Length: 68
Image 1: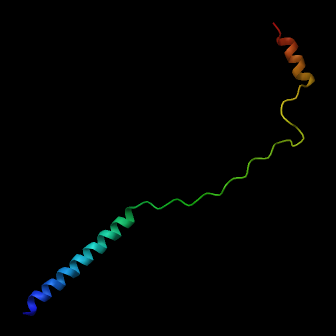
Image 2 (image 1 turned 90 degrees about the horizontal axis):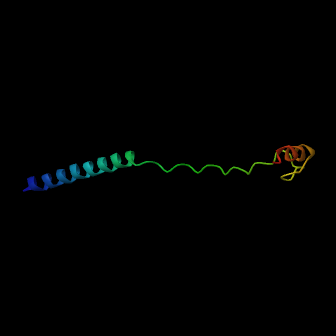
C-alpha cells in the first residue's frame, strides 16, 4: 500500500509550494519602510550681527508719515 503514502507526500509538496508562493506574493506587495531622512540643521541667520527688529531712521520716517 505505497500508493496512499505517495499521494500524501505529493499533497504536502504541492501545499508547501503553494504556501511558499503565497508568502512570496504577499512579501512583494507589502510596502517597504521608508529610509530615515537626514535631519537638517537649522538655518543660520543671514546676518549674524543683526538681532531682530531695529528702529532705524527709515522706519521712524515711515511711522511719521503713517500717523493719522
